[in-house]
Length: 100
Image 1: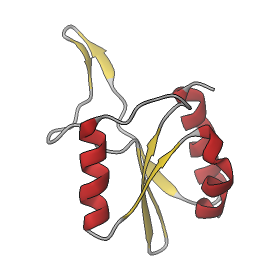
Image 2: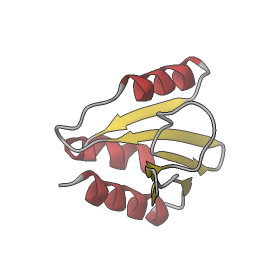
Image 3: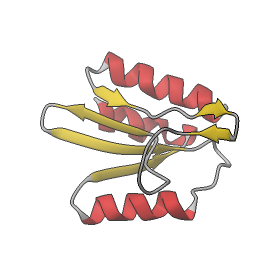
């Protein structure tokens, strides 16, 4: 499963279970792929909210690697008391449990 397919499956599940989420998508520019966000790179793929819960989610294909910047963001958010995840397709049982 590609990361894009996995992300679609996760976002479909978020919608099914009543979560609001955001994802910042990169776009091709004359200077290559860019994401129109200021600040530090590596922000998690998804930020999801339902009720009083907030989940920061990084998605990876089964063999995808977490970059140092992504790991730093997840660590900083976790230290700030936020719920953070790095999920792969093989984590589906955990994903469903968290999102229900």
